[in-house]
Amino acid sequence: MNIHEYQAKAILKDFGVPVSRGVAAFTPEAAEAAARALGGIAFVVKAQIHAGGRGKGRFRELPEGAKGGVRVVRTPAEVKANAAEMLGNTLVTLQTGPEGKQVNRLYVEEGALIDKELYLSMLVDRATSRVAFVVSTEGGMDIEAVAHATPEKIHTFSVDPATGIQPLHGHKVAQALGLSGDLGRQAVALTEGLYRAFTQKDMSLLEVNPLVVTKDARLVCLDAKVGFDANALFRHSDVAQLRDESEEDFKEIEASRYDLSYIALDGTIGCMVNGAGLAMATMDIIKLYGREPANFLDVGGGATKEKVTAAFKIITADPNVEGILVNIFGGIMRCDVIAEGVIAAVRQVGLKVPLVVRLAGTNVDEGKKIIRESGLNVIPADDLDDAAQKIVTAVKKEAA
Ligand code: ADP
Ligand code: MG
Image (cartoon, rainbow, N blue to C red):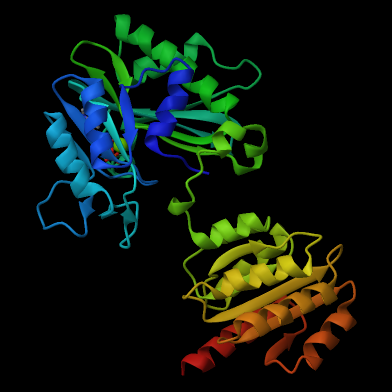
């Protein structure tokens, strides 16, 4: 689960991590009031969307050459005017995809006088099973481009969970960022605070780009992008409350409502499978036969008819889906329940694309019977290989 920059900064602040002062605003009037309350001689109006690259982004509704999603202005009146221009409009950035994201919230922040822009991120490194830091002196820009062009400018190290965070980790960060003296000490404190926030709040990703050195020699997180491990949200009700459903794929919201593990992908074959391993194998074999999966979907072990119906609706709601492959190996899951769910969903939402169903395991005969007697145009398959070939062939035929 992702949150907005202003929310991420509030959490970091609780852990003693230095961030700029700011106030969230939902209307131009509130943005102006926020600027007055902050005071000072420069304000930054920042679009709050769950995507980076806002500064270099472009508003679809505004003329070419208009400012992007991060605007530095001088007065509260200018804050208001810029807020009015941004709110309700669609910001397109490198990370939003061409459809962009509507801006419904702003963050009004005090303007910082920047000396240097650095990069720091943290993630869970699966290779080492540890929390890793990634730091670079090349902050403020597209870090993927830096990694590509000058990989030697990116430093990575991980923290042994047995020792936890130690001053030596902070020293590594300071050294990699070329910070010494008092700034070096600030880097040590910052590293510790970020690590505590990351682990205590069960974050899965934290990216500070840029981390800046100000002209008055302070280290400040000027941007913050944070994601949380969804499986740990049950122990962070404060974090769960920050969820902004308007930022999420509605298919994924529906899926989480029914406790389905669903991930939207770019392909054309919708998949409904039980078990993550079988789901992965199904996706692989679709690729092997020349198509791409439209989603990952694990309906889980003890799915009910309602859950299967919801899953099927989510798959068919994806306009890119040209065919659907249901692949169930009934262990705890019963094939007749799956069959009933599929039939119920097809009756409700209709079936405009070919559907291949492969059932095996518990109550397979009942399942097959339900599908056979439904009168619906379902293509039965015997095994995974057969099922994948059949759906790919059916989709090709449909297109011809
Ligand atoms: P994004 O990464 O989505 O473009 P950032 O928060 O990183 O958004 O802002 C983009 C750039 O705007 C930063 O690299 C920095 O140069 C500038 N900026 C952001 N916030 C401030 C601020 N409070 N004061 C001064 N400059 C800022
Ligand atoms: Mg940024």
